[in-house]
Length: 477
Image 1: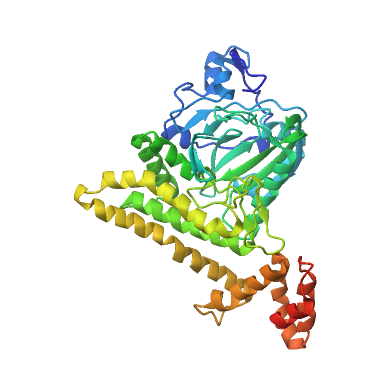
Image 2: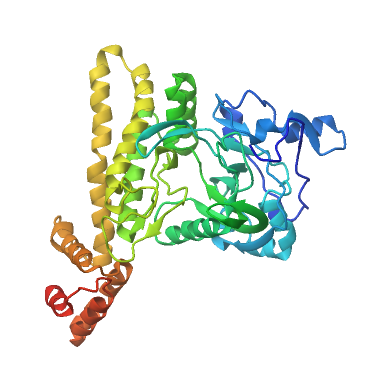
């Protein structure tokens, strides 16, 4: 519980000054169509508008918004906190365009934007909520987790695309557990930049909108300053969103959530909907992880509560990109056993999909003839078994592009061309990104007899001091 949390009336945020960057047309479906927290049934700002008391408070104990408690629904209303001295630091032009805004609109009134996009003032007609979900963390069921420091401002539709807009670090929610609900500057900078970088690399990902620094003191390993990231995704539903109600034997809510995801995100699914939902999750996750491996991205914390039902990279925490190519690279200091090491990511993704299959299996069984239960098991197994071939096909496609194997692509390209090259990089500790980029120089080097110089450049980028440069060149040449 925050030190400021009380059992008295909840203080709400004042309305944001009306500007181009603080006005979005909200079209919320998640809170309208899915069951929420029974402890606070009505949005606090809706209550405020009814009371017309002239005060910026509602008669709901603040503890219901800021202290951990068990919630049976899929979401809870949330109230952001006031932040000291918010400062607009960055706006993603392409992220802003996704929701019909412009970066220049933020900068025309940076102070207003900083207040609104840190949660210190309320965007017009925004009723914030936090998602409730569970998850397997490092392979162990952790029960209820939820968005402890992320709050959704609302959903908006632009160019026929739906985006759920979230603030991360705006304050505690009923899912805060033992944390404080805030984010620090260093991790917020990393998430803000990583999401846009991954998008530029062609990796399915959530997107960034804005980054605001605050003067709030946040205690981690040491005392730091706070920040709030505004981030975007078509949906923030996770594998764990299905696991939590299923763990409570609440198959009605599990079905409602599955129907919601299909209705809004896979509307072309018509028959056998729940097995098709699993098949889509398998295909999208296989594509996402294959592209992770191709660009050298290590997520670091692939718990089921961090896996998007849409196959998007979300929740950038202790992530890293490979420097020296090391397939056993671990980027999370909390993972000494290497469960989420770089080369383990495809295996873990399939394990997570198997966890997702469990709550969906109950729905598939409900919709199938009892005499066809064995067939249902076989269909689920087939859906999960498709992950390997789909991952391999996507990985081969991306790596062929990196190696320039367009006209001469063969089925064994990965085994014959790609993997031996990666083995060499691993043996010598050569920088992965630099090695991939160097491949662009090979055609010109071959035609100009300068291949030796290219190989010299690769050898010099070796991170292994024991590397025998002469042997390295002989192997590559």
